[in-house]
Image (spheres, rainbow, N blue to C red):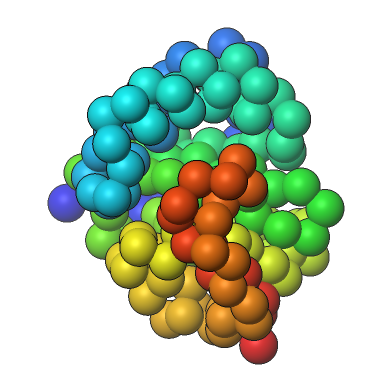
Length: 150
């Protein structure tokens, strides 16, 4: 197992977007079992071509320079956090969240209610549910939990 000390967080550049999108898709396929193939194919170009450039984006790379995870923030909110499936359980997600909390005063995140692993992760690190929405921001039937740091 690779030690977390071998990882570094850096600002993502447009040159990283394709690799970040590959990580996003692998992560979604591993954790968002409620999404259909059509949903993934719908979101993939939006992630690559629109969403990544609209946020403050950071990635964590291993010693070989491979992106293991990334986090995107806007204002005081985490907009996205995704990890390469093989990187889960190594403290990478927590390291990314701690980084943006310390550097950007992040206190909020929205999470798909059906992604219970993510909900549990955020609760474990101190977030609590403050509201629930029946649909996501595109009107799709995926309930969203708004969470804030306690």
